[in-house]
Length: 56
Image (tube, rainbow, N blue to C red; front, side, top):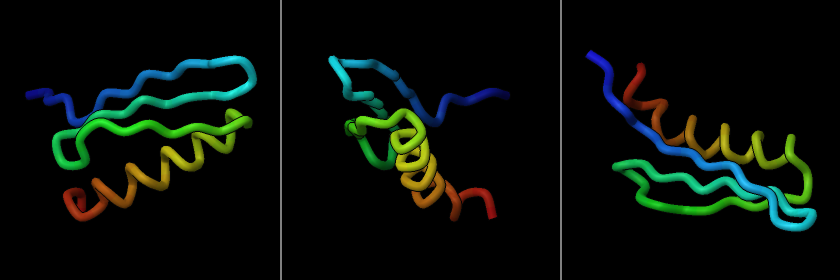
């Protein structure tokens, strides 16, 4: 059975990359960075910290 655990929208506004994230545990939030790789690293770290205890 598949279950959605996270919703992510990626946008760009001028020179800023934006990730809009929503999870059941963390609720809605937004991350911003002028570098796309920086945004992805930040997003990965936050989601890993949030979900890691569930996957151990």
